[in-house]
Amino acid sequence: MARASARHILVASKEACEDLKTKIEAGADFAACARENSLCPSKNQGGSLGEFGPGQMVKEFDEVVFTGEVGKVLGPVQTQFGYHLIEVTKRTE
Image (tube, rainbow, N blue to C red):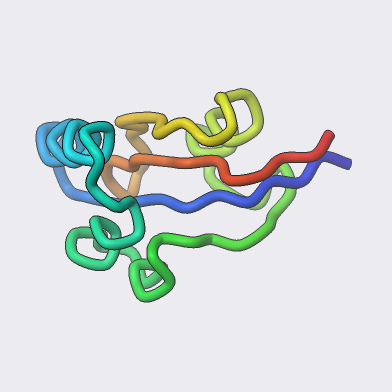
């Protein structure tokens, strides 16, 4: 069964999400941005969600994690919680 490890940053608006993505792509540290900006308790771990399998996260999040490029900052991804930047750190099929 497929497994993935990912970290994310959750914010309230698409604009805030896009702004953070620009900063990270310009060299800002993902974990530091998560600690400073994320609305999710995972911000205390730099946005790390640990390892999980398909179906353990909401559908929109799941699709990105299990199809997106590993090591690239993906998003904004909208869910019922807000807007996410997602970085898949590891994935096995």
